[in-house]
Amino acid sequence: MPKVLMDGNSAIGEAAIRAGCQCYFGYPITPQNELIEYMATHLSRRKGCVFVQAESELAAINMVYGASVVGARAMTSSSSPGISLKQEGISYLAACELPAVIVNMSRGGPGLGSIAAAQSDYFQATRGGGHGDYRTIVLAPSSVQELADLTIRAFDLADKYKIPVIILGDGVLGQMMEPVEFKQEAPAVLPVREGSLRGAKGRPSKIIKTFTSNPAELEEINWSLFRRYGLIKKQETTFETFMIDDAKLVVVAFGIAARIAKGAIRNVRAEGLKVGLLRPITLWPFPDEAVKEVVKNVNHFLVFEMNMGQMLEDVQLSLEGKGEVSFYGRPGGVIPTPSEVSRVISRLYYQKGLK
Amino acid sequence: MKKVYAHPKSLKRAVFHYCPGCGHSIAHRLICEVIDEMGLQDKTVGIPPPGCSVFAYHYFDVDMAECAHGRGAAVATGIKRACPDIVVFTYQGDGDLAAIGTAETIHAANRGENTTTVFINNAVYGMTGGQMAPTTLRGMKTTTTPYGRDHVIEGHPIKMSEMLAPLEGVAYIERVAVNSPANIRKAKKAITKAFQMQLDKRGFSMVEILSPCPTNWKMTPIQAWKWVDDEMSKIFPLGVYKDVTEQKSAD
Image 1 (cartoon, rainbow over the protein chains, first blue to last red):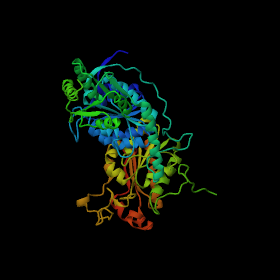
Image 2 (image 1 turned 45 degrees about the vertical axis):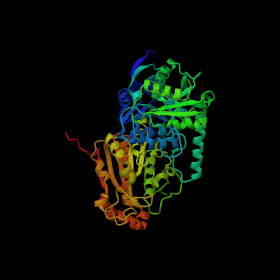
Image 3 (image 1 turned 180 degrees about the vertical axis):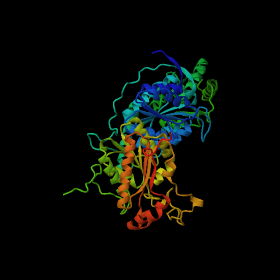
Image 4 (image 1 turned 135 degrees about the vertical axis):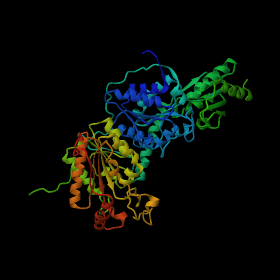
């Protein structure tokens, strides 16, 4: 299939349709409006598919909940302040083991913040986000092509593990245009997902619920969720390494920051500095084994994020006290350039006596 | 011998956990009778709320999906849009529908979602122990209005049926009560009509039920039933607020 030039938000929309997404519910917020508009234009015209502009993010995520109850592939999207509102619904989806895809094209915070790209929702995304003991799978793309690919993967993972999946992008990824190739056609009809409620025809009635007055029963539900999370960690953790084989210093970065870091690494490599990159693609489950593998040969790490140091904690936890970790972060929606990051890398490289 | 009553097929044979004199169990039974009579048991999905009726799924023998406080109308929207052949009803209390879920309710009604809402108005938060509801009457004592609801501070009892009826997406709204045999019969007729509106794809339908809560009203069941007539229905008058099948065309 030929490549097309597309902004990231629209690419998610097209990929979602090709993944068999039947229902989209959303509420406008910058910088993800191209996605809701793409779905209004394209998904709404597809037979049996549903587009609703909801009255709020709360309503949108609860519409997703309803669509997931009846077994439809459903998604919603928003940006940071809107994602905070969706946390109620995400907690219920997680509790009821209902699949859903939630896109966060994150922006600067806290509060209304700015509409510029930021990565300050890492904690919220990777720690569950809402109330209660749960996790969501968190995918962090770093190009428009990867946005498309991970959108399809998100729907598959959501169905496979009966779990909400978050695509954590940012304002840059959503807005920038790149060539993208869509590798699959939309399915004509998806089979109805097992366990969905569509009326008790020819079977006993079923209940989807979260509330129980019996703590022991709820404990068992939590145990069961975490057994599945263990399986996800074992089977679905993904990451990318870049120029890591001979590296003396490894940058750890995700999403658009990893893209910037790659440029910076190319710059410093040209000056003879041996620097590589570890890029988590699943932020939850975090690739801690990959970090443990790297520290066998490398002692120095630079965590680079567009926030005040959130993934930093996962890197430190993975290292279990081994290695030396430095951090460089720009919060609030400021986007550092590759040359700015290369200056940070080379300063650290020389300070640590690696040259 | 003539059979005058049978246990509804879609009502499970479980013992209600509701207090003596509570209106929930009557409302449950009426909905189940209607579901049976209309032959909807195998194509219905019910949406119970948090609150006293959170355990409604222990009683209704239809598919049930519990939802977050106040979000019934949004969840119903998701279900109905994804699967238009399913008959969807939400069962919501006054705190659920008229406080935390007001936005979801108004917009689902305004979109004309083909869903049915059974709105239990008992003027109080029951499960949490009798706090002020948006429908608490002026002067009424609750645990959070211990000196009586003062409209200057706490506002006025909100009238949802009156508020929603003018919306163009609304097909049918009636306010009924379950405090006497005559009212219970009317309530059942209203619930039947509401489901019929959904089947006919006429738009949003709602039956508001004035429902006694003797425990939190600190009354005996008999006093509570009388209070619905003497006090509550003066502020919340019974009757049909919208019925598109009765409206004459303007042309």
